[in-house]
Length: 446
Ligand code: SAM
Ligand code: SF4
Image (cartoon, rainbow, N blue to C red; front, side, top):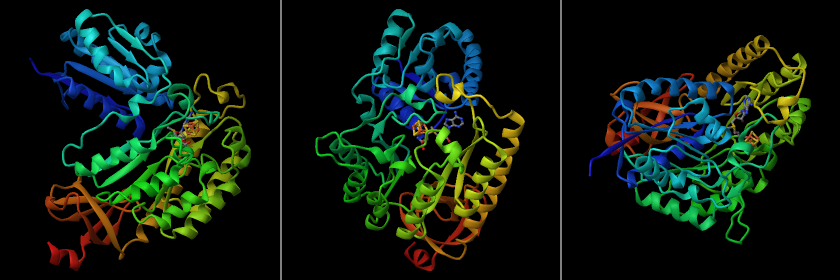
């Protein structure tokens, strides 16, 4: 049989990255091979994101480029999956008539059947139904290219309905995956050389095991912590309102749980947090951060911040700046508020102008750069345990690994170190990475 090639372009968050890995794994089982050059592809899948307008625009630009390719190669199959596909459904084909496939966030596991139908009939397929089961969560993804870290989906959807956010509408309501299935997947990954797992969900703190035993997320972390072969556990994302003391205590009780938490705060103003339907106050958030730093003094804390939510005054914005000054995050993702159709905030008046949003975003980012550098410089001279991941992107002479606090360290070393946990001394600190050198003990071992 003639070999066929798939090219996947991914927009958006880690969930989408992991969904794309599942798409590739499914199509590889159906005889396709993944390629990096779109011109070689017989099948192109765009895994879309609709969290902000900018993300959606990028998808349409990418599809515009593909139209030219399709005019030269009419047999090319082009499909869109992910959040924008879920939102638009059949309307996507009206807008982009050369599309062959639109599939929703709950339909990934049917992809080979969809492609088979299109290959046989040439008729476009649109499938965006939400299913009750979580079948697409457990699609096995092989560890490839000597990777040492792997995502593991533990749940899908979200019940929180933050007033600005489209996720509950495009990913459906929250569903947790079976506890034993997750543990089994992690065991299989270790057998394939994976040393670190990143547990994924929109709100991992509300994980609730579906095997009738009522296991919560802290139980899951503890269980995975007992699997030999796994050296590091990470997770994302945590909602501050559901961050239990039991989970916080895992940062000291479970050795393998890395000292990093991504805890999106969104705003420092209680008025805005209320309008966002976040269900915590700034003081609740400070309390959670204090607790984390008491249990685990070296923990790195990262966050998400939205500027320019409708009605955000200078005073509200100042509360965000003040909060950043008090907490001194290791890093943040910061966004201008983007109105999403169908969300509760889309109906709010008192919109903040683009120009004010832009200025506020710049201020937040400039302040964060100062804090990131300050936190990174505080690590200079310290010995850090790093898991070596790959050859460095900066120089082929260097290797790159991550500290337990999730900071990238570049250092001189050889590729045989990939997959090993080693000790380095931090010698320099930059905004996006650290520089290190092998400790004397490591040099002797090498
Ligand atoms: N579930 C995670 C949580 O609530 O912590 C976050 C998921 S969302 C994919 C990632 C981030 O995108 C959010 O934390 C928020 O800061 C940002 N975001 C979501 N909707 C947005 C919107 N309409 N405009 C701007 N930023 C938005
Ligand atoms: Fe969106 Fe809020 Fe759910 Fe996060 S918790 S995915 S921001 S609705």
